[in-house]
Image 1 (cartoon, rainbow, N blue to C red):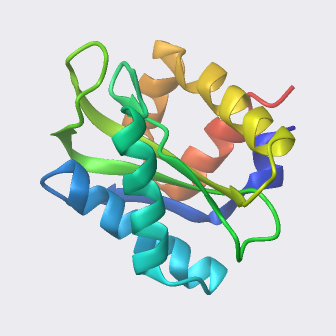
Image 2: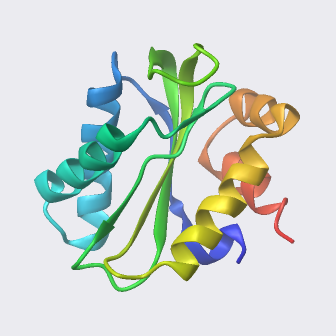
Length: 150
């Protein structure tokens, strides 16, 4: 699986201005609602349910919130770079400023797990994350993310 299969250039938001984890997830749910046609409330609740199981932060200022939804037919993703880092309860006790949300069809495991593993591999590289933090905008972030496809 490569990034371009799940992430559209229009699903990148390079300057999301929020003050906390909950606001960030609410905005991600709004963006996803526009793309999927699903209710933002339903998406937000699914993301929060997953966060209650354990934080989706992976360290290094990165979080990968994810959820399964019955109304979605294919794995899709949205990437946001936050204007200011927010507290997210990550394992390394840092703040999060890069978020890559994954939504998958309910009952589907294979592609969802492949997407999660692929994104995690790319965003665990501190050099890639630094390039993304310094990138000028959505087009450059998309290029950086997809340039690491296998």
